[in-house]
Amino acid sequence: MPNIEIVEASANEFSDVSVQVTNLLLELEPDASKEIKDMDLPSIALNLLSSSKIYAFLAKRNGKTIGVITLHECAAIYAGGVFGEISELYVNPEYRSCNIGKSLVNFAVKKAQELGWSRLEVGMPSVQEWPRTLQFYERNGFKGSGTRLRLLVA
Image (tube, rainbow, N blue to C red; front, side, top):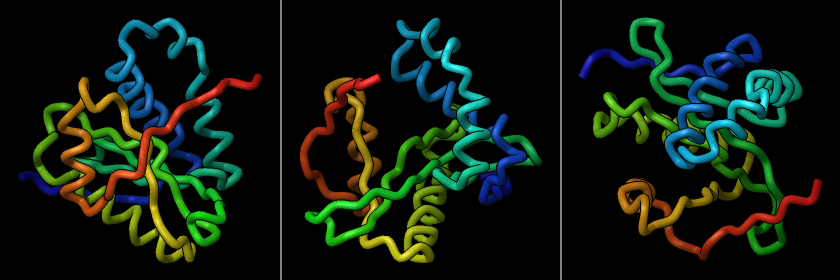
């Protein structure tokens, strides 16, 4: 595998982060492409990175971004206090099965430790449609704890 570098993204790298997240969303929900493109993800990424509401790590090969993982802080009594959640994880298809996702998760774990988070959680897409995603997380030490649901309030 070619030399891959993992770097923590600054707000200046909002465009790289938003491109990778856009690719993730389009892969997960191809029928929602108009909605996804209308979301102004570059502005959202810039705002969230600038305000430190999320942390992002980029996988790069020869200066080109080929993957991303984003994290944010949560808090819950069941989790023993403050913990982190992986918001997005994406690796360009041609670089999958090359341990890049594992490297991104390892950097997320280090960041979680640095921030004093007690655990990392992640939401899963449909296991029926994305069984390899569940297998990936289980291989990297994650344990199942139910399904996450969403309710749009705004």
